[in-house]
Length: 194
Image (cartoon, helix red, strand yellow):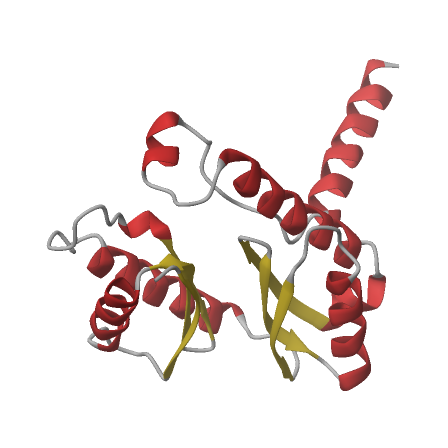
């Protein structure tokens, strides 16, 4: 009997992993994080809820799960959608789902009509993202600027920069990002606060 229960638990855990191939991410909201953020705790939580609901909705659709690779990033109610959808119909379906989520103010659709990128491409994108984040962490000349204020996303060698920034901060972040190797294009999704 215990072997059957163990087998059922194992199957359940594998099922849960299989159904959550795309998950929202983000650090624990600490006092330090709030000091380095321009969003309130409530807005950070709202953005994470947008991402979680989006991933849940997208993962519940078999076609989307099998034929698309989608990244959802929310920042201050603005949602950036990147990745690949196998055809225009699937892309439109993804956008419709995201637009229907509460607290979404604006959607930036940067989906490509293509089959999902391979693991080598995704790994390269992760390396580019880490390189940009490392470069941004070396900015020490701007008062009250923390690199965590800028969200960095890379998809197919295109770097997306999101955040609430002053124009000087945005310009410096763009210029530093331009110096990083392997970047095809930089797209800003900044919300300027001056």
